[in-house]
Length: 295
Image 1 (cartoon, one colour):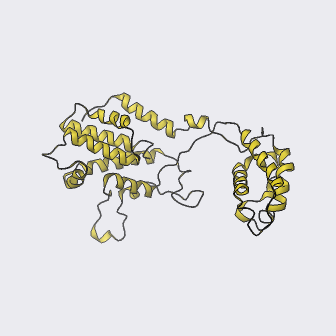
Image 2 (cartoon, rainbow, N blue to C red; image 1 turned 45 degrees about the vertical axis):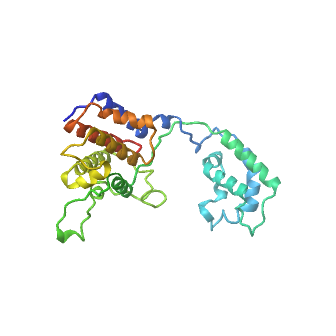
């Protein structure tokens, strides 16, 4: 087994820490509006915004029958006003697009809309950056299974006996990864609140190892040759190894890579041949599939 410099391992780990760690650079400079008690626009809200809401929005967005889960009568304090940043963004969009109030209802005049738009501009200019935890969205279990299949061209399946085929789950990915709970939206592919735990991380590692071993097995030779062409003998040539890595990484990251970026990856194969070359290809494939660009 070929050994790899610890600098490469540390580099991969550092990249993942930056992308997924709770103290990421992005998290240190993210903006947070809710609970912003420094916001100074509350007084202007009562003068410039509430009159329009009372006249044109309260009939549908207040009281016992609230449409769209927005009740403007509950927005009272400074924190309430500042905490509804996304609501004001939607209000302004509807005003600009003319989509609210509905077409069969009286429409706000220009004199009514202008103070609201000016107030909103002041609101977004008053937002201050605050430290917060960035939680990137990871692939759901189903998305991960489908994407892994797209990369390698086959499904990872568990071996089950014939009598159990109608009862047992065949996908190794679904068998090993924890079930995704529904997100805030109610859908299981809403994974914004699902953390990348050590359990999931270990299972990713195992699944990628299983996929690369299957790809290089004799039974999967046709699939391997679909990437690199006919293989003479038992080993990949250096040209075939580079072609395989190029195609796998491009598929994994789901975009065309800059030439200098892919060349840096392919350079890791320089000077290697036979078993050492295969080990290097497997290592680089795993590095790509364990990276934030894939997960």
